[in-house]
Image (cartoon, rainbow, N blue to C red; front, top):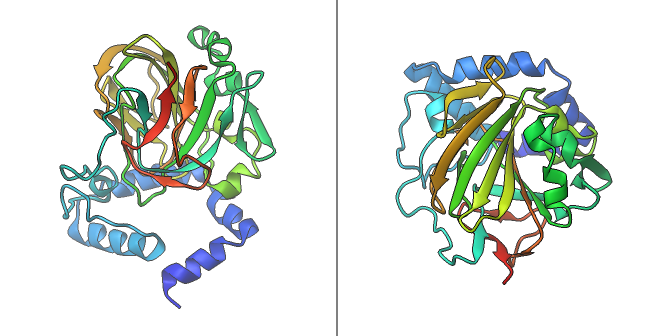
Length: 292
């Protein structure tokens, strides 16, 4: 049996999966991974990527470059031109990233779900900042969607629509794994982890949120509109005005490894075909259709 198949078999044992990926010194290992991934040495890069391939379905066929001077460069790789097709229909909001669809549904009484039977309050996710207090009422009755990026996926995220990024709220936190096993065990996990709230409006003024959430080994996010690296060592201001405009499909930033993006929309959008829990989707694929 191949090492990857054996590893996947072990990981199907949920108690073992949770133990190995969560009951560990999460923050220490995450900081170590950040340091290790930046080492620019051919032996380190080659051996690290060989191990990575043994435990994942890493596919670099759609990458702009095939050789990397560090593990970090591979994590944050760009796509070759034409590797993704962004749905051009202005009625559709598209996926900001490659992902596996997680929990999704309707925002009801300020509550959403991370997994079946595991609700969390939207306000708890958004924190106590004054600029976040109005969002639960704005989004009530709208839609939410969980997009999980695995370690082997393309890690950059893009504008889902022609949008204006008004503000970023950074919230420091833990680094629990965000895989399905952890989401069925840790209450309000997304509200515990490090995250950033992206306050946005569509080109026609509809407000919505995207919330990138960090995870174990990957507590680091970069946004083009904010000239700082947001990670466990960040000690700067938590509120960052932006005023940046993006066209649909334009790159907005990236994760250092892989994690989750939560999308929250107000009423007025319908689900696009094929969006369901467990489905693999690509950046640029239609997620929602704006109702007339």
